[in-house]
Length: 254
Image (cartoon, rainbow, N blue to C red):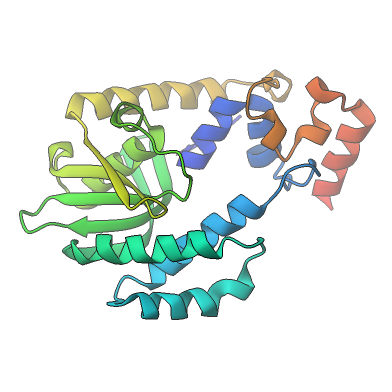
């Protein structure tokens, strides 16, 4: 099964469940096979991300509220007005302390090895007065990752590797961070070059592992993510029949 590289979401999907990876990235099935999953959190996260993206130049909470009002009808979720207000106030305080924003919603596609591509979208990249880069990912969850968790976060290591390549800087000159608008907290970490290098090596090994797989070898993995999986209804580990699965696959071909 040919694969050129990874985005953070593609890598996370494969890590969670190989069958989910096959449904999403090989058969291109929509995640519509789990009626019990609420889309509120996903919609709300997208809403806050868009406000923060559009509000980089705002100098008051009032301006941010205007963006929030303008965008609200584009997203489907219930309530959360108090949470939104917290996000706006915390973001304004955070934003005032940043220097030169070189990009928001940065789309990248870079070869970090000769035959390994990484791609994705970075919420924000800031260049400091010393020339070093701060890579920010906005997180609307209430649970914050620890520095230890961030140090081993595949998404942020992919971002660091991409920024190093795009701006021709050393990994030592890059800091990655999660910003939590609900709490106003910023969790940061800097990587050792050897840490990112070893991660990229493992990523390349995983790429080859996927390339060698046959379709029947992408097996389901029952774990804590199953209840939130959009493919649970067509998963054999959760009672899906061959007929149900075949109908879903045929639907994707139309």
